[in-house]
Length: 165
Image 1: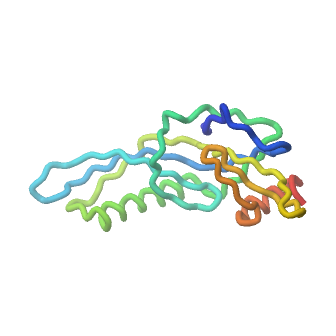
Image 2: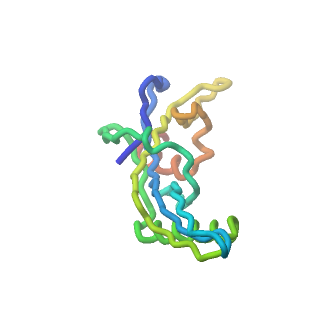
Image 3: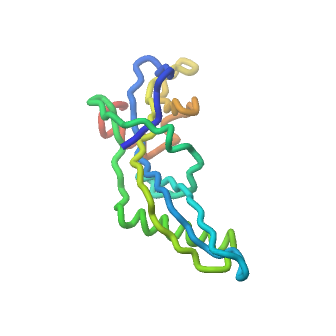
């Protein structure tokens, strides 16, 4: 289990840490670009959102992951995605990409090489805007800040946990 480093990142006052579950997978794809060419081999990384069941390419560096150490006061969103289903969806995602987008000549041979459980850190906190206190979500790795009510699955979970009312 891994996360991004929070070293040097200052959390807002009274912020509650929240970790969003993802899975990063490394795949090997073998294909023939044209009939007269040799087989090519590529490695690709995919990232799967385990709460929303979404998969896409991962362009980050897995060497920057740090071991995840679960803390008692941290919230972790529940996962709603079975491992077998995730692998099948990722396999089909790559297959469609290589056949329809890359338009390779041969049917791609796709192999799962490695899997990383990734917990992306966020902070939930209250902020006063025009004399109205609102709940905010901060992603420390990018510095992005947004209203919590735009992220219904997170808002529902933290309400169930009694973090916000």
